[in-house]
Length: 65
Image (cartoon, rainbow, N blue to C red):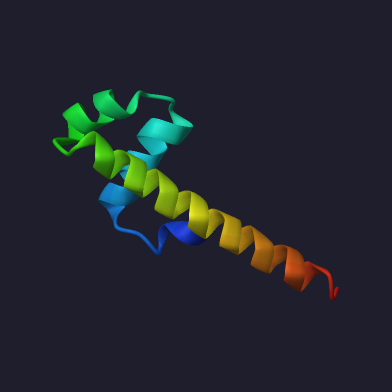
């Protein structure tokens, strides 16, 4: 996650961490951060997508070691 966190705002990473890593419900995170639940799901999707891309790049780069 550290590798991709620079690609996102702190608020996006906070939404992702609270919902995905810490396991809080999207509605609860949304209420705490004063955003819509949809914003939580969008943040989750974007960070997951970037994590998958980063992992694929890492695997591709590792294949040539």
